[in-house]
Amino acid sequence: MTELTCIVCPIGCRLRVTRELDGLKVTGNECRRGEEYAKDEVTAPKRIVTAVVKVDEGERMLPVKTAQAIPKEIIFLAMEEIKEIIVAPPVTSGQVIKENLAGTGVALVATKHCK
Amino acid sequence: MSKIIDVDLVVIGAGPAGLAAAIAAAESGVEKILLVERQEELGGILLQCIHNGFGLRYFKEELTGPEYAQRFIDQLVRHPQIMVKTETMVVEITADRRVATTNATEGLVYYQARAIILAMGCRERPRGAINIPGTRPAGIYTAGSIQHLMNIEGYLPGREAVILGSGDIGLIMARRLTLEGLRVQAVLELMPYSNGLNRNVTQCLEDYNIPLYLSHTVVEIIGEKRIEGVKAAPVDENLKPIFEKSFNLSCDTLILSVGLIPENELSLMAGVELDPITGGPVVDSFYQTTVAGIFACGNVAHVHDLVDDVSEESKVAGRAAAAYLAGKTAAQEQLRFKAGRNIRSIVPQSVSIDLPTTIYLRARFPERNATLHVGNGKARQRVVSPGETIHYVVKPEDLKGNSGFVPVSLEGGQVND
Ligand code: SF4
View 1 (tube, rainbow over the protein chains, first blue to last red):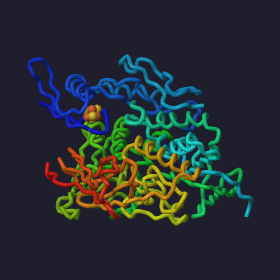
View 2 (cartoon, rainbow over the protein chains, first blue to last red):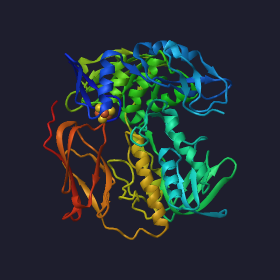
View 3 (cartoon, rainbow over the protein chains, first blue to last red):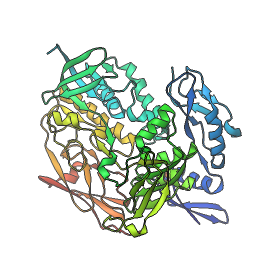
View 4 (spheres, chains in turn cyan, brown):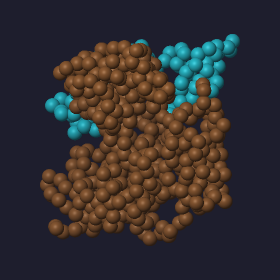
């Protein structure tokens, strides 16, 4: 059995995952998203990564995020790629900054406009 | 004195609270609104909160801070009656709602408002307030200033950090520092429980194996010019350090995440009554302060865990200011709350007897399976913790038969895990 705190929403339900004959069983969740989270978490944990990238000749950094959650073990590899990025303005929020970040198939997108 | 400009409503601060309040007031028909922001950009503290987790309640979607702010900024174009002034400071307000602003191009300008919404937010408790002995070397920051330095300006503070205090910003920054390659030695928390949200302990500390030392504090700062380390020690049940058990943690950066205080210098100028517990103005169901026509919402009223709650209550304040300006708020009977067992704070501090009001409560200590009593109303709380706000909607029937004070308490919980 594994005990987890659900991080999907701020309620933070305490989840219990047990292995049964017919698959994983989740209890303690107040909604379905908690069940999905718990199953992912014990098989292939994923996280959305947020960071900032440099803007060419800009004084301020541009915030970015992965468009979807990426495997937890790839986070540091993804950060290495993110640190190398310099974007040329203008950028609109939601714009793809880098496709296929660290080979995950997930894009890195801007989360703010930048003139 | 220079000329005085008449406006209906002045909203002070264009962070999440001010934006939501100004938009709600405009939607409710207020014609001349002035929204004043001291920074260059709108959005307030959200601009430096680049992490995600915002908006799950309000937009049913997970957004980062800048994205959440943009949702509101985008709405401003639909409301030309909101006049926005950035890089402008409000230097004075009075009880009869005169507002003095200053900026580089216009100098000092006076406005006569018919209503004011205070939305100045909060600031971090400075180090002085917690008195750590030792030298005063460089390398000591508050969590929010580190957040600004890293996320807006793109600087890294050092290589090795210790974080004192487990507030949400501290937890978020522990992860952020780790991702940028710093080593976070430990998060030390004076209390026996975390002051941040559980999900932040999980996703910011546990995910990266950052140790959280509960019931611990920093007893000494080591280093001359630059901090070289701290001496940490556990504390006893009276929160007194046990010096014999102290140990050293090396670090070139010490980050303080020891709490936030509403920023109310302006409120005091107008004679608004503050609640000594929340540090914010005493407000009623309409987020009106004790001075008629002056409203307060967001972190200036009380420190929130979630921006979603800020938006929600600021909408209430914006609409209420509109109703006030339209002369629709006849004196409604309000009852004041009285905090009982395990209740630290309650906002609003009073409620109107004839309409449902969402209230935000904080517990004094963690417990399980307690029942929240609000007048005649009851709600079971599986887990309460001082770090997590309790929401409750007070209904008129909860107040029936109560006169004067409405008692609020948590009863019958189990204190030990
Ligand atoms: S299980 Fe559902 S309600 Fe509980 S924390 Fe997860 S997402 Fe939130």
